[in-house]
Length: 194
Image (cartoon, rainbow, N blue to C red; front, side, top):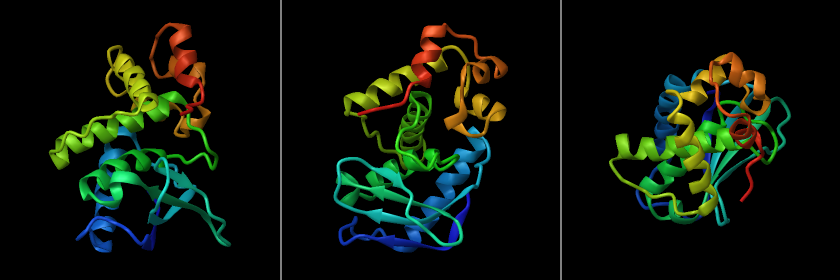
């Protein structure tokens, strides 16, 4: 993933002891793990900063920048107090950084892959089992787990055919060799909403 030479870290409240250098190191390590699993990032956007802020949900935002397309990762809620929860949210948002759409809604397939990865990453590398409690995210995680029952690494297989997740369509699934019911495929391609 393309990152600024010196990623800005902002926010008045953040986990105690979670220093800028640690956050930048986490960005690099988690990004490498994501790309090794799901394939290389498209690199149309550059991650410029991480913002610890008050808000309802972590997300990507796209602030204007004169010389490139910029992404800001916003971390909220428990991430303001717990560095492991910050890593949990970072892992999710960094999946979206593989191919940022520049817009608000990812498809259920991408949101499910991001939710699956954040749980996987925290269990495997952070050794903390953070449960996905939000019903909307639990639902997309369930959908992704159902897809995993059909094939290994479906998001990686889809991205091998079409690297930009926001361009996935029925043909992408077929070309990737993922043969599922049309109704389930249509569900996975719907925009995610909370």
